Image: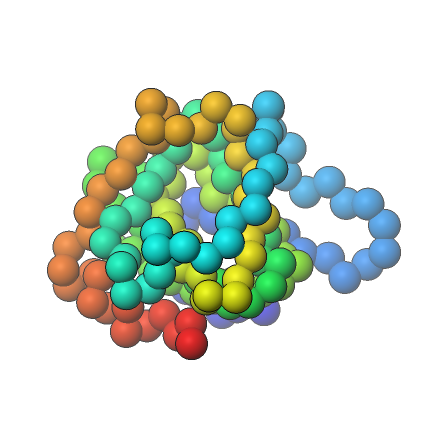
Length: 142
C-alpha cells in the first residue's frame, strides 16, 4: 500500500482482497468511464489541476502505471502532493478537491463521476513553475 503520509487531504482509499460485493463509494447520478493515455495525462505536459463542484470522482487503475496529484480545496491549489496508484484499489476524490492524474502510455483508469460533470461545474488552475518541476521529478511513470 502507498505510504499514507503522502496521501493528500480530501482523498479516501478503498481496497479489499476478500471475495464478495463491497459497496465502497455511493453518490448520486454517477458516470463510469475509461481513461486511457492521451496528451492531457502525460507527465511532461503537466501544468494544471482541476476540481469539480458537484461530484466526487473515483479512479481505479486497471493496467499500467498512474499517479494521482492532489492539492486541497482552497481557491487555488496549495502544496500539491503526488502518489502512485495501485491496481484494483478505489481512490475517491471528494468534490472541490484539486486533482489530476498522470498515466503511462499503457495505462487505463476507470473513472466514476456525475454524468453531467464538465466545464460548467468544474474549475482549472495552473500550477506554479516550482510545483510543476517538483511533481515531474517526483512522478516515476516510465
